[in-house]
Image (tube, rainbow, N blue to C red):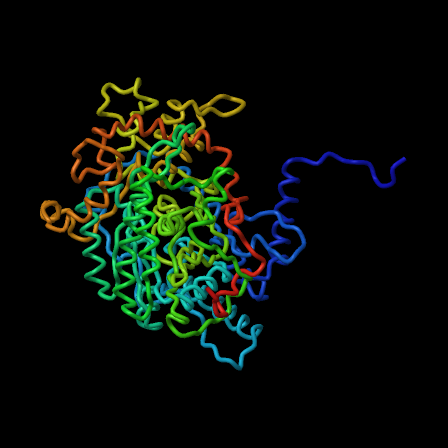
Length: 601
């Protein structure tokens, strides 16, 4: 007979409580990088959501060291938003899309980014880390004291991730920030600009990515806005979806044209030459770009994989473009001379899901880092030797503290859609600014009870229910419309931007729209957007993918996207389990040795 008492029934509720207590114990004791575990006092950092946490085994490598950590939402707030999701919403005027950086960030306040505290050589590594931990605790406390939890956006609360940003910025000669053209001021941090250009006396480049998703006059307006308000900033444009075609054998999978990648690399090279002058010899970079361009001209179109996966038979090809080096987890203070040993170091920073890794792949001409729609996919920064004189540092995406409304952060891709407890508030925000029913061609679930179609009032729940019925999303047992899955699908389309595109305007753009449409500088923007369709014969001018149901065949775009989403459904749920080691790039045990030692090329 087995020893011990008789087994008793264990309910689902008890099991959930047991798992919750287990997670809390692990969160409190296992990971010393969570700042809340360093203080015995009650701290706001104790009530956090840990995003993309992976199961770990005992060993030196901690896969959860750089996971996303956001403030946990209150249950009462979630329940309130669920009730509001069934209330009808009304469109907002176009002027509501105009936004300035002053509406999002408050310069000189606690909303400025946390900076590494003062350091000198007398401090040991442990003393410096303790000083950083104390400073970060005080920084978070001051933030919540002044602005409150309701006004503050989701922002990164993992000190280890901030340390990586500090290290990349300190190590780089030029800091390059990639931002999405649809949400430029929400992605761009004035505090980072001041820190790089004024405190560190370094140059900064901003890349307006995905410019082929919006109209050319809007791109030009944003370009002039940044040049006016941030005079030390250099601005360039890049079209991430340019020249994309369907990948053979995979409906909905798209790969990008290398013509677009070379155009972006040349533009970046020109900006870097303007910054470094004759201090660094960039001829090897120019020769590399010219060689790739001539190879395309002789062998026909070559395509760059833009998706998060990579064919196994092509893995060896991705290493030839550049050398990828992963270093040991050293994020300590770095201070060195600029252009050391004649090498230019460019640091890539930015929010998650702005296309930072995709742009880096385009600059390299081959896939050297993996990309994904999941925020936090890049776990640690990597050093990439583009040529013997050019070095690239890819920093993980990091969300800065701001006053951005949380629904916008979901639409921007800063918060993982699959982790949302309540997606309907983001659908409401999107529906007030984009005509979702007309674009998706959905029928109101209660249309038969209305005398005319004009009397129909849409709510976020209605949109999700109608889309679930059209796509055939049903719950497992009762076969009711799966509104949560439909909401998830709609938000992914909004993040993708080719079907549902929400874009914000600079101040006074609505009144000056006609003047921007006649601006002489449109030619350069249209040249970048011209790569959007391979061998395209249409003359769409300044039209955008989000301009409505027109010659872009929106129905085919929706169907292609939905097909790709169906194929990727399992992958999207398991994106959190991906690591940078799956990018097909060689790695070594020493991750950061390039950041503190000389490089022999």
